[in-house]
Image 1 (tube, rainbow, N blue to C red):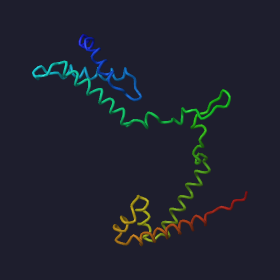
Image 2: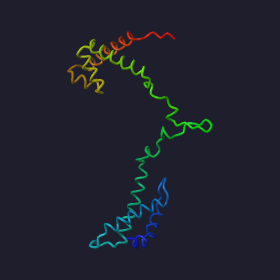
Image 3: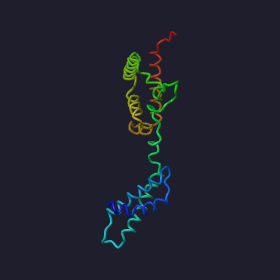
Length: 188
C-alpha cells in the first residue's frame, strides 16, 4: 500500500490541483484524493476490463468532487460558526474579562422567595381554574395547551371553531379576574 501511495501521490496531487475547495486548502483536496485512491486500491477488481489507473482516476475524482459538494452544502455551518456564551468574551475591563454568560442576566427565579411565591401563585391558579371552568372550557383549554388548532379542538369536541374561540375567551377572562384578585399592593 505504501509503495502504491508513493507511486500515485503525484497523480493524486495533479488531480486535486484542478479543483478548488471553498474554505479549505489544497492539502485538504489532496487528502480527499488519497482517500479516493485508497478506495480504488480496496475495490479494484482484476476481472473487470478497466485498468487500475483509469479506475483509480475515477475514484480519486469522485472523492474530490464529493468533498467539494459536501463543503458547498453548508450543512454544518451553524455548528461551525456558533457563538459560545461561556467562552466568548463580551468585553474587558482592565485585565479582567467577562464571558457573555456572565454579562447576560440570570434566571430571575433563582431567589427562593420568588420560587415559593411563583409556585403558590400557580397552585392558586390551578385551583381557581378547576373550580370555575366548565367541562367545555376545561377541555378546550387542555387541547389548546397541547398545541391543537381551533379546528382540531372543534372536531374532537363536536362543536364549531367559534365555540372553541368563545370558550377560550371566557377562560382568559377568568384567569385575568383571578390574577387581578391576587394582586398585592405595591407600596414603593
